[in-house]
Length: 230
Ligand SMILES: [Zn+2]
Image (tube, rainbow, N blue to C red):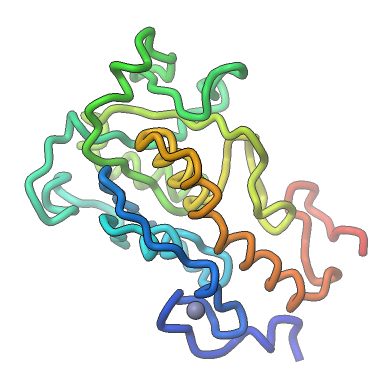
């Protein structure tokens, strides 16, 4: 019997997670004004801990698309869209990580340098785009969709580490789950600070259930490449 044997079951129709990891009790429904688009890499198949679905299920205006490339923004969201009024949460490189001391969401130029007038750069945004997958999968999505270059660019500067804790590797401090990234960005752009806590509630429940169901010795701390201490 594998440690995860109890988790391999049908998916809950409400939250999309295996029934034993159901987080429906923590799902909210928010009427977001700024649209959310998640591009999910086809190989991002973490059914248990993936969060893109949890983000989109909680939002009135959200689209989740799985695939590698799309011809343009309008095609992927399914309606007319002005690419210059959409912003992509850009991963950049370590060199382009947001400076400390700035807000949780930073508008940047093509080189990843924060723009001088943040209020202008963060205003008039119709939608945000998140790339869902691990580091290299997100990079592949970036390069396979050149229209993303026309979008505004946002960098995240999360005030706290990812809720995943040691369940997933974080290459950099600002690397958080897709759900956390979307929650941070929406809370800022919609001036709804409470939304961050509300939207991330399912992930808190999910990680709690996952840790209960999965014996500690079976979890590998991938940051150090070895098993964690019990
Ligand atoms: Zn559920």
